Image 1 (cartoon, one colour):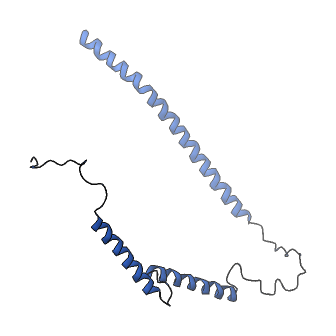
Image 2 (tube, helix red, strand yellow):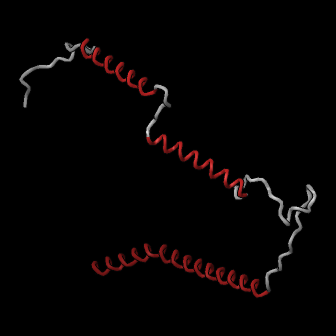
Length: 154
């Protein structure tokens, strides 16, 4: 639907009207006045999310202190125990000898590796056969097409 008036954007003033600017400045100064009243002698309040974040920070700090006191933290100081009490500074800990794996465990691992190798080998043979068959299919299709053409002509 056509407009009943013409609008020329070149004729509209590009700056805001004085009354609008005055209202904006008055609103801004009013919000600043309220902010200074709120501050007063109290701390600045940033909102509930900030308060929850600050509270969680204090909780984490207290938990870290408790873990350090209990010796659960990796940064906690080493407490003397039966294993580290009698060793001189710089001494290496005594190595404990672990028993060698049993012969049956080694044969089981070897048998499983052999089974996996044979499965891989048969899989490769299957892939080789399938690739050869796939490559021969276009030639077989051309041969069949040539036979049909001979039958139609003959």
